Image (cartoon, rainbow, N blue to C red; front, side, top):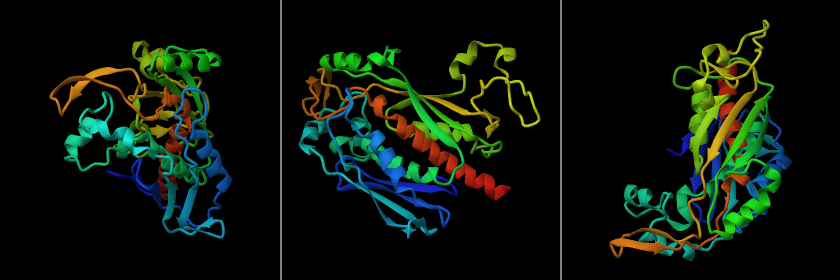
Length: 328
């Protein structure tokens, strides 16, 4: 549904063109200093501005309306709210009868009987990830791990020093591309993860795949390891602390963190909304028609999705860390 977590619990609300989006965090320990600069910094990393990102620019000021007093968490639910101000809902009127290929327009129409807010993708818009970035910034304040992300490839491009020129060419074609993002957590401890159904890797996969446009997740060596021998893939233990010679398992063994760095690779698909005309079904005329999509969309969502993935990993780790401490 719309709530994730056991001890560190978030509830996400809002749609792309509603007055606001936001999140309620329950389970934040009392007395934690709230780093407002970290929230602002992480929110800025998600904003557009680079070549290939959407012209829609929101201020993304995070308003905290409860759960914080004198700069520290009170132990009660924390409410984070973000206004939607730069919206153009008329760009989406024609999509009620001709849903976009690759987007959730059709399935949401059927599932919710037409009562869903279709504007800007509604509940299925990447706009909601702004609230997740804010929640992840809060989660970072209670975990001892260091998180980072890196864009590894965009479309067919591996040399990212040429990314601007590459994305400008894709934009001229009216098309879009996806990308691969690596997310990493270092300074890990041994023991996070609750087998059987709350294994650390399972929770990471669930959370990453909840993000719009994410279509694949692998951990450590990932799918490449399918062609390896066990003698190649196994991470040999070299000391009493459990350190290993290699890290093909990406920091997780048996669903439990093993102390090595968490290494996660995430595939973000090409943006569904493209300017290039597409022949797709029109539910008004009951035949195929040319669809031309209006609105303001990213040529490459992956270019600014890294902080989203980093911060949802923080949410998972915060929940798992509190459970780890509770059981110990």
